[in-house]
Image (cartoon, rainbow, N blue to C red):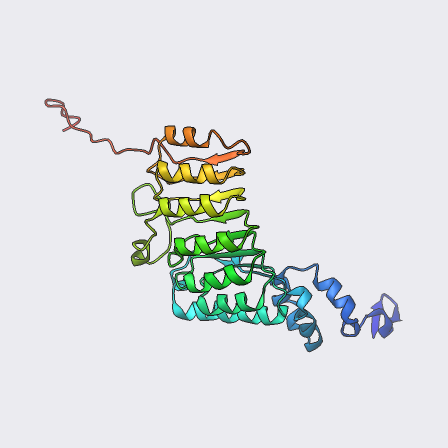
Length: 298
């Protein structure tokens, strides 16, 4: 190639332009390992077949993380979107060749989660928020096949019941983080959420039963989130007595608890460093009644 440099032309040999397609697989893996999963999907996988095959290497597919890609959208609460998430998860499970250790997604179903549970015994982190079609059936497979699970987020997944918590507690002794948050119910002071209204009505109503199971079967928990749960003082007592190693406790929106309840039952948690409490002084509407004879208020 010739480059015009003022009055003279400079010949540039092809050696100055490296042929990236000739990189060895070891070099490619080293480079791609420094990229996020999303960066690999929208970059190297589209360059060449050689690069795409390198991206399929099991060592680059130990983590499946779609959490950062989710923004509120009603279109995600559809069977069609769930099919896409299921297909994506199954493909990463296959690429990992059983080496998948972390799953963070939403809107998957029984099909893909059972598929992962049967093939990925080393799973350690599982986030399946907002998965209305994940039930106790697939969670039983997780409990039986993935004993190394240490972090679980089943927030807003209302088809998962307290029975799953019992199975997981019995079989996953390394569980340290549990997030069982519910969506805030309708009201004037709750944040805006995008979810089918009929789904809000199916929220779990057995907060005390779940709390009792957590206290009995998950004694090693260090981090527990129970936002908008229906548990009462009795349930909180069960958790605090059974999970003495708790360092973080989130009770935001647990309106059946009082300030006194929380102070009394958490006082024995010697490792507790942070606690999120309900709002004990929610804003109230003030009705203004005009005073007779005052034209400015009538």
